[in-house]
Image (cartoon, rainbow, N blue to C red; front, side, top):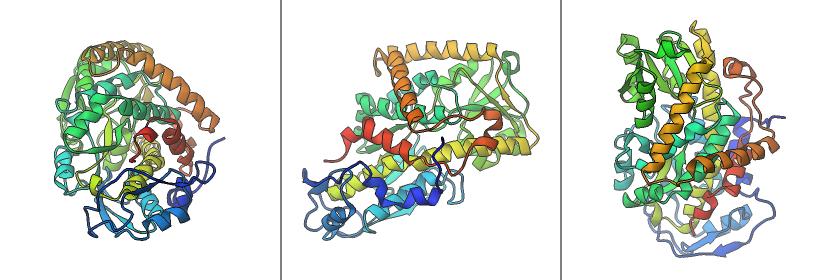
Amino acid sequence: MTHRTTVHRHATTASALTAGGAALALALTACAGSAGTEGGGGGEGSAEGFEYGAPQEDVDALLADLDPVTIKFQPSAASPDSVMAPAGTVFKEIVEERSGGKIEVELIWGQAIAGYGEVHDALSDGRLDLAYTLPVYLPAEFPAVNDLGTALAGMPASPFVGELVTNAVGNELGWENESVLEAYEERNLTPLTPLAASGGYYTVCNREVDSADDFAGLQVRIASASQSAQVQHLGGSPVSMEYAETFEALQRGTVDCTLGQLVPSAESGIFEVAPHLGYTTTASFSRSPGAYLAGSRFQDLPLAYQQIIFDSNALASSGGMLAVIGGNAAAVGQAKDAGGTVTAFDDQLQEEISTYSAELTEEAIGNGLVSETLTEDVQDKRAEWEERFAELGYEDQGTVEDLDEWFDPETDFLPYAQASYENGRAMEHRPS
């Protein structure tokens, strides 16, 4: 059984934040400063917080004397019409409903304030309050994020359940890793999701690629150091470039393929110039994790506002999963419409990817920034989350090749988000 509902309904109900069971009483917690964004001081009660799942009327009473604020949030999507938009719009709707309109979320589309190379600075200096970022683009500054992304190559290659499991595992790994958290703290950033595994990686090429021989000599756009190593190992030539440059590079033949997530490929129309999609079934490429971070002014907000933002970000991962998996389905449809192919790699190529990914993970462990038992930890967490999501009714109903036919765009991912938050590590870091 698959969870079904309309996207709008599960995105806009404040009951998402009170669904933890019985109503929980309000709690007085440690002091937080007054609001640092529009609206001035936080007013009386800015040091008070509430327990996750508290009744809405109690939250409303707590916020009554607080001044309204506006926060600028830059999600990953180019526009509100993008297949990636739910990662931003769901967050906005949950925050504004839970806060009774006291927190207004201004969505900044298309990296209009800061590109991925500058976004951490924009958070630090106050141009942005919240943003989706790509710390993996800066491996020297965030090396542990890169190492954890490398280890996620050991996760299942599946266009639906595999995405849910990998994101739940990645979220836990991020919260458990002190090197990841300290890297954000050093830049005066507050992690809301320190490691977002996002979508799996596929080849999108101007010709069909499904074997080791096909990889030989390919110019492949990559997103991380470990992916660069993987492409080289397979006989290709990795090319590092901003994703915004990829369409033109494929169109001109500067590169033959991009190794990337399908969501941005669907959004940018890349299948017009590279209609051939290749995928794994038993192995995975390493991930290039993102993160949802709050900027320097977050700690100046009243505690209750911090808690609303933190809770809402966790539950808005329902929109993130809709964007990722819906984007996968859209990409498959676009490849077919463009006259391309959607093909699984042959067994030999997948075995080569799997074996080398394991070697890269051991090298990442050797860097000393991740657990020495990381490989075992990943598999243990994988088993736990696979069982949990099966209990919730999530299942693959086909392969990547026919994903556009069997994926239901009205699938309700809120149970996924609630389980990941309430049973994972994030709750331990809720502002208090």
